[in-house]
Length: 390
Image (tube, rainbow, N blue to C red; front, top):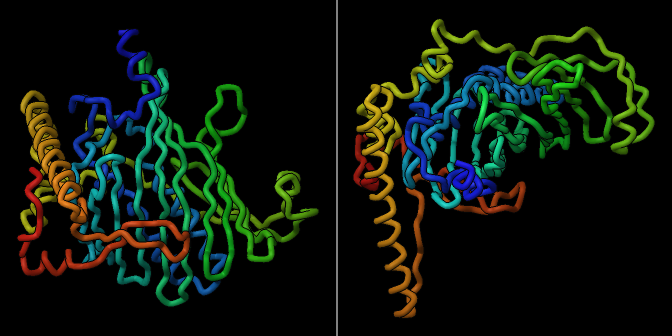
């Protein structure tokens, strides 16, 4: 055991072959869609006329996406290249969401959400992970963009690091740690959030998140406080003893505030959640069969479905078959690239179906942006462009 652990310690965990026994019956694309569980925070934010107040709701939304992770120690399925996942809740909840796995090495997913309540959200997340022996660090790389239609306020932020502890011995548990800086590119307002890592010796409450909302001139307006698994509150600052705008100054600042107001509170988990992978009400609906979705949709993934139905051996067999099928396609693509190079021709390489790589005008980095067409294809039930991945 020690020898094999030494071989994989420090490696990127996505390159370690794993059986479905370590998984939960959802793909990473479905987990990404779970970020929308508290979408109503963005509906409330869209109604704010004051951008500083709006920032408080955006900050609460950015924290809320971690609330589902506290008991979720099983690994989601790593999507196949070209795999998609849609969630069409336009009629009842006002939004529709589409994700696509746009790269396999490193694994990257692109996501686009449109809401008829006046906002759009998009992100491309690449998962980097390192196995450290006793714990696994998961570092999501990439920017999350959120834009409100009426004001043109455009927010950008990144995710924090997730750590799975007790990988070898003991009960698995998850912590979130690091800083999030949310920037409103239109007004230059900022929110700085700190996720405090758990410490056995600390007197602080576990899973603590604190933050402050600052305008373009560096003046603090709101203090945010709470936990990433339970709730977030905001308190309006009435007086501040801040001496200067330096980092050291901020640490010493004392704020006098009005009583805090609740921004977000976690929904209780369904009854019997411990026997259903600790899924939330939303997570439980994500893998319901739907024949109207693209043939590449995670709902149609056979190994995931077999595992959900308790057929572990068949699921492991299917997982092996799908991964070998994906490797064969990759080898074929590499051979085509070599052939094109030898003949002096350009080779375009793999291109996503519903997203395209563009320079993001806000961060000046390349990012997969939704190019359209998915919902139109669904309307016509024309999936002829979709690759055969399952």
